[in-house]
Length: 320
Image 1 (cartoon, rainbow, N blue to C red):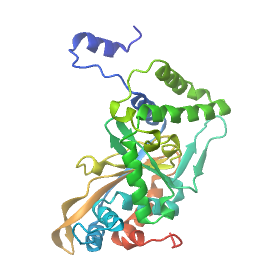
Image 2: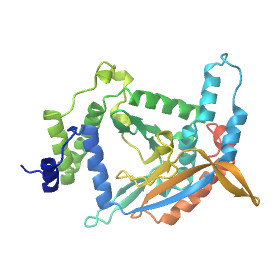
Image 3: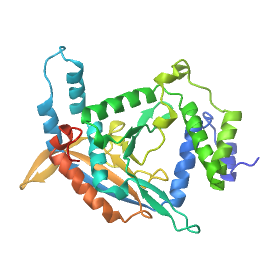
C-alpha cells in the first residue's frame, strides 16, 4: 500500500536477494541531492592538469632515515605521498582570491529575488568514505594554516569519521537545522522534520557494534560536519577514476572533484613524454554566478601546482 507502483510491480515480479533499509544518513543524502537535482542548474568544468612539478617537489622533500623518523618527519613523508591536504589548502587559497565560488545562496523568486552570500570564512568540507556511507567533515579556514596543520586536522577528522555512528551524528546535526527552521518559520523544512521524527521514533537500522562502544569524544561532533561553504570530493582516493562530475550540496554554490594521480602521455616541447596528471572538476550553481568566474580560479590552482612551494612553505602571516 502507498508504494510507488513501478517499485511495487518489480517487487512482485523480481526475485529479491536482500532488503536493505535506508539508514538516516542515506535518507539525508537522498533528500539533499534530490533537492539539488530539482533546484540547482549545474554547470561543470573538467580539466586535466599536469602536476609533475608537484610530484617532483614532494619527492625532493622526502626525509630519509629508515625507522628513525620523528613525528614531524613521518608527517612530511605522508604529505609527500598523499596530496589531499595540498589540494584542500590550494583550493582554499584560490577561493580567497575568487570569493564568489565560496559561499551559499538564498534564492527566493517571490520574496526578494535572492542573495548570494560570499563567505569570509572558507570552511572546506572533504569526503571520507566509511562503511556506513560518505561523511563530510569540515576543515575551517585552511588558507590561514600551514600545510602540516591542515594535514593533521584532516587525518584526525578522517580517523574519527570512520569510528562515528553516522546516524546518531546526522540526527544531531538535523535537530540543529530544525531549530533554525522553526525560528525562520520555514515550511519547506517540514519534509525533513518528518523524516527526522520518523527515523527517531521507528529507526530501521541498528548501531554498528564497531562504533557502539566507541566513546563520543572519539567520534565526530555535529559542528564538525556543519557550516561548510564549499566541498571537495577526492574521488581519486577511493577509485582509479580520472574524471568525475560532482553534485552541489545546497545551499553551497560550488563543489570540486579531484581524480586520481596517474601517469599519462603528454606533448612537452614537441616530444611525447610521461607526465603525472590529475583531473579536476568544478561544478557550479549557475544561478549564483556565471561559469566564467571559474577561469581565474583555475589559473590560481595552476600556479600553485606549478610552484608547490607557495603552499608547502606557506606560514601564517605570509601573503595568501
